[in-house]
Amino acid sequence: MKRLFDIVASGLGLVVLSPVFAVLAIWIKADSKGPVFYRQTRVGRDNKDFRLFKFRSMRPDSDKLGLITVGGHDPRVTRSGYYIRKYKLDEFPQLINVFKGDMSLVGPRPEVRKYVDMYTPEQMRVLSVRPGITSLASIRYRNENDILATAEDPDRCYIEKVMPDKLNIDLEYVDRATLWNDIKLILSTFKEIVTK
Image 1: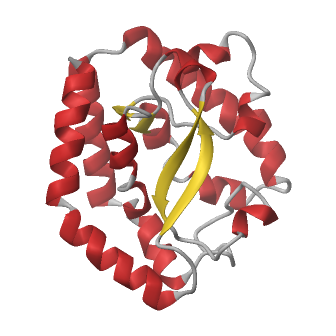
Image 2: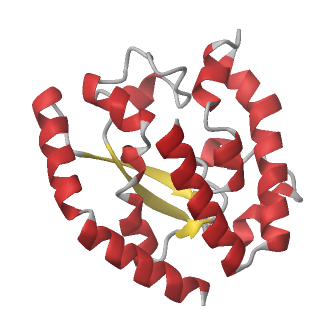
C-alpha cells in the first residue's frame, strides 16, 4: 500500500506541479550559470547508492567546498536559491526519485556515503526502508542549517550531535511506520512550510 500510495501521489504531484517546475527552472537559469537540477549520490534502501534530484540552489561545484550548508546566507547559495531553500522548493524534484522507486514520500532522509560510513550497526537499520522526502527528524530539524551556522565546527557538530539525534528519531519511525503515520507526517510538513 505504501508503494502504491507513493506512485500515485508522486505521479499526480509531478503533473500538478509541472507549471511550478517550469517557473523555477527559468528563475534558476536566469539567476546564475549552471544546470537547473543538482544531482548528488545518496545512500538508499539496502545501503545502495542512487542519484538524488534537487533544484539547484547553490553555485556550481559548491559541494567541493564542503557538504554542510551553514545558515540561509551561506555565500555559496544563489539569490534564487535562498528562497528555494527557505520554502523547501528545492526538494520537489525528488518526486522523480519517489516515482522511480529510489525514495518514498516519507522516510529517513537519505544521507551521503561519507556519513553513512560512520553509522553504528544499530543506526544502519534506517537503511531497511526507502529514504523519504520528509520525515519527523527533518521536521524537528527544519532549522538545522541555522544550528550549524552557530557551531564552531559545523561538521563536527553535525556528526556528534545532529546526526545521532536525527537517526534516533528515524529509528523510531522505522519501528512504527504505517501509511496513516506517513499521511500525518506529510500534512505536518505542509503545515511547517506554510507557517515558516
